[in-house]
Length: 56
Image 1: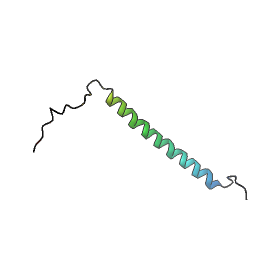
Image 2: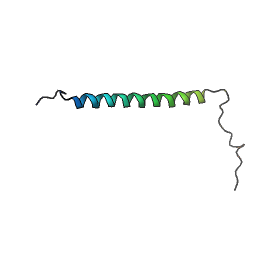
Image 3: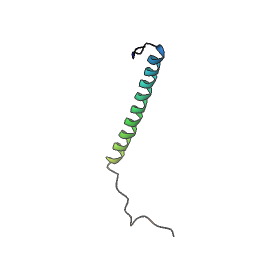
């Protein structure tokens, strides 16, 4: 018994894992892009703690 991948199941599993990896990578890239777009927006500013009203 060798270490080679002779069975068709391994090819299908690799194909499924590759597809899932690409989808996950695309999702991460989308979230990263949205984060960069929000941070680089001209209207973006850090909230001032004095403007936040606290209800106690």
